Image 1 (cartoon, rainbow over the protein chains, first blue to last red):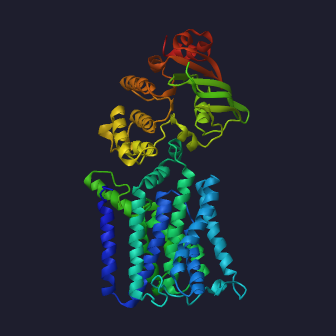
Image 2: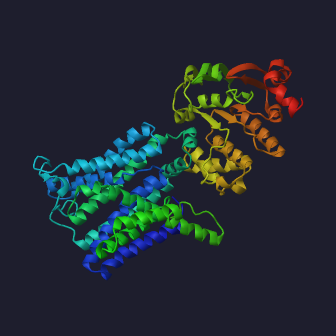
Amino acid sequence: MSRRWPPGIVLTVVAMLMIAVGVPQLVDEFGLLQLTVFGAMCILALSLGFVWGYGGILCFGQSAFFGLGAYAYAVAAINAGESTLAAVLAVVVPAVFAALLGYFMFYGRLSDVYLGVITLSVTLIFFNLMNSTAGDTYRIGKARLNGFNGMPSLPTLNVPGLPGRLLDPTETFYLVMAVLVIVYVGLHVLLASHFGRVVVAIRENEARCELLGYDVRLYKLLVFTIGGGIAGLAGCLFADWGAFVSPNVFSLTMTSQIIIWVIVGGLGTLVGPIIGCLIMQYLATTLGTQQLANTNLIFGIIFLAFVLLVPRGIVPSLLRLGAGAVGGARVRNSA
Amino acid sequence: MSAAVLQTVGLSIRFGGVEAVRGVDFTLAERELRCLIGPNGAGKSTLFKLLTGQLKPTAGRILFQGHDITGHHTHAIARRGIGIKTQVPSLFDGLTVREHLWLSARRTNAAERTRVVADEILERIGLTSLASEAVGRLSHGLRQWVELGTVLAGNPELILLDEPAAGMTHDEVARTAELVREINRTHALIVVEHDMQFVRMIARTVTVMHQGAVLVEDTMDQIMKNATVRDVYLGTRASRERPC
């Protein structure tokens, strides 16, 4: 393909690579661990940024796939004693679940509002379900689910096929950054393809796409499934990072956070959700350690402020300002 | 007359107590250009929605090239080869003119060929200079052409045009009529239009609808002389603004 990459995408990738290479030299191990989980969350933010910002699918329950990925990793890794298959299942299980759920939603022609309600309900159902799995009866193979206490001491990711060769924290950081870059670039490649251009067109005008002969239901289902798989991958990295997973991955706090990241960063870009996620994660960490104010309260205020004052989010607003200064208006899909 | 490209048999749709389309038997020959006229609420646009699967008929059948397409999904009907320009242009406002043509042509063409088709259509609808413009920023008349071009780029067998000349200046109307005649050399068309000047420019056979049913089907000249048609449609309207 001879299509040239837009400068915004190149810039973002260069920045990510610089962070990936530079950070381990600059920060201590605690900082590195912190940035590793930020990276995993950025991947989660990308998944919703793709599903909602480009697919136009209002998914309030992206954490359902995130949590399924985390639990799939936990259960499979404990049973297998190593992480190769577990990492694959962490993507496949949520993707298959997203496909099933999406099939009923899109082929049942549910409208946007119902999509939001159903996806939110589904993640809360998982939350309650996993909370009720305390006790020895609830186990999958060797893995005890442990209800609201969560599953501790999960096996660390190892080099595929080499169970004894575990990744150290620096290698895990490289892995997370590599996955982030691959997912970011991969989604942009997808969006530049025939498939991706139809997906954007569906967001713009669903009826026209059908009149042109595109099966909108199928496209939405595929977008939703891909988004589910990416969220699952983030869940896998998250579970590996803390060697722990609890029902909180399905909680209302978790799922609303993802929405806030995307809103703050900006719908309709991929770099927006990443930036939104970084800002909010940094805030959450800072506020959490200082105990100055309730984190959820601050998040609520920020969310409201953005919805009311900067509804486009940070990145699209900045792009708009930049474009206004140059006098052009062709800023869509450029980052 | 050659084989029918489109045929409807007793096509009806009912919304509660209103039968918007009542037992329409309609036949369109290959490469025929048919104008469909009738007062507001006659069921013309509803008929188009039935033909494209946007509405499901409560009774009757639709045959397209001999295949029963009644109740099929909109996208499946579009794939069979029915393209429509809707009454209010249905476009992707954030996308460029070229992207519209690309999306339409790409479904059936390889990437290379799609680019060629898009360029050809841009030339045909005279929008080459506006190819990179976002469609949301264009005037209503230009949007009409973008939608017409988008439909053309998909190269459907049958093209439905719902008020293609609405909101256009006199020159634009003439240009559209020329375009429609040109399209008709290779495609069958059904055109709904209120602008009688425009209809006279393109029409051979005209179907008049009234209260959901086909009132009469004849040549333009005969239609203009038809007293019933004058009563339901031309009579009141023509005497007011377009004496004929």
